[in-house]
Amino acid sequence: MNADPRARAAVTSRPTVVALALAVGLAALGWALVLRHGFPHGDDLLHAMAGEEPGDARTLRGWLETWRFDYAYRNGRAADAVARLILLGGRPGALVVGVLVMVLAGIATWPWLRMAGPGRGRRALWGALGLGVPFLAVQAHSWLTGEGLLWVSGLANYPLATLAFLVAGAAVSGALPPRLTWAVLPVVLYAHIGHEMSAVATLVVTALALGLRRPGDGRPRAAQWAAILTSVVGFAVLATAPGLWRRTAEEDLALPLLQALSRTTLLFASLSLGWWLALGGLALLGARLAGRAPRWGTASLGAAAWLLLLLARRRWPRIADLCAEADTAVPATLLALAVIAAAAVLVVSVLVLVVHAWGALAAYPVLALSLADVLSAGVPIVASVCGQRAFFLPVTALVLAVACALRLVLDALGRTGDRGQRLARTLTVLAVVATLVSAAAYVTLTSERAARNAAAYDTFVTSVEEARATGEGVVVAPDLPEEGYAYRRAYFLGRYGCDLRYFYDLPDGVVLTDVERRESETTDRTTGCETTWQRTLTRAEEEGRAPGRR
Image 1: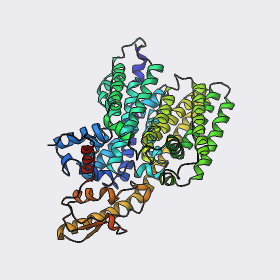
Image 2: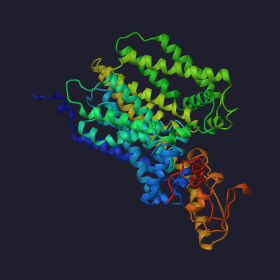
Image 3: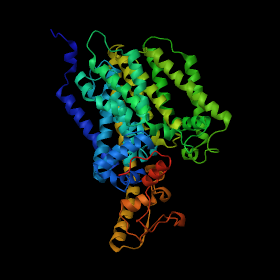
Image 4: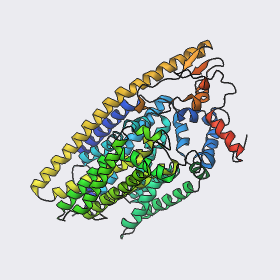
């Protein structure tokens, strides 16, 4: 007789391993087809030219100085320093890193899905579904791909932060084997110091783990305690970063609270309403399968709130309009209050339905991911960030929460008898097939549209090479045809003009301009042209907060 029944369950059959390896390979192929169209633009140029002299970040000493400056002055986070490392590998390096990050993010869903189910059978199917979660998340809007994946700065700040959160959250929850937990402690630390959104999300899960998955149930849990301690220390390091507090206090970033709340709520609602509806529906079904009377009053309140958010969202059909003018692009006061109240009612209603259906402990992964989703989505309020990329982590967490709720429902269905088991197996297969079809459609569409931007970029590079060879001429910054598949201000010369000149080593006398030939943004000299980073250094020096000069 096996002394430890869990040991038998831990054995994975060879067909399952082969199937999971195939799924990982398909996921890697899908992300490679998308990410091969990425190219440096926006803040990538800024980071590549970072330092007291343009390009200092390419040396170890210069890179460390830029990281220190980030922490002390710019924004407090380490993600930009990671972006500078990735940029050293050029476009091929960014492609490799991007594929690794997105595939690992899919693999990092597996501990969460295991927490939501007893782990019996169909591991290959649930593993494939987990690999599809990042594909499902980015389909909420094209800008989650354009701003979050197809340039290095977005990749380092959002998908990488999401991966760190998923791993760190699983570690503090005790969902990883002890040896693996010890090995990923640096990831737990990075989840906090890397980016403020992953820091908030990880802190939420850490607090919930202490309340619901308390370490110390008769077995030694030193690894989980170490992860929790690392999480607390990491959050303290980020929370005391001078650069973080300076950034949130900038006058041009701080909108009135009501404006920021309403704008952020509508932005996030546009990306997540469908997933909140799915989560609420699964909770109602879970209550029915558990033999509990559904709370129709709570469900009705949530449905009314959901409908109000949908109607308010339709009032602003273009999300970009919300980013236009701070005073006019945000809903009027009464509607803003209604939007904020509706969002709060929707979230509370769904979470109440989740707890009612499965209980707080059984529904732990759903609760942890949902709360991390909501509270991390509030981070853009502080910084008044207007861009879908800021919601990469919250949307991914919410999609994974729905996947965990689906597993709870199907496992409960499988316990109702032979007929229920057959139905649960069929529905699991259908969910995986639907995910695969959805991912394939996303890859096809995104590859086609992102390729047009990449072609415009390649034309620009050709003109740059010709200008370098002749030492004269006019170089026109690319006008990217697919707006949703790149950073909105990809080649805004008013910000990145000098960075472009240094990045591409344009000779003096070569005129750099945009498609509109605006004289105010035309540059014709590289020598003496002040990069974005140098302008930031000058401002820091004026404030008496510049790093030591070499």
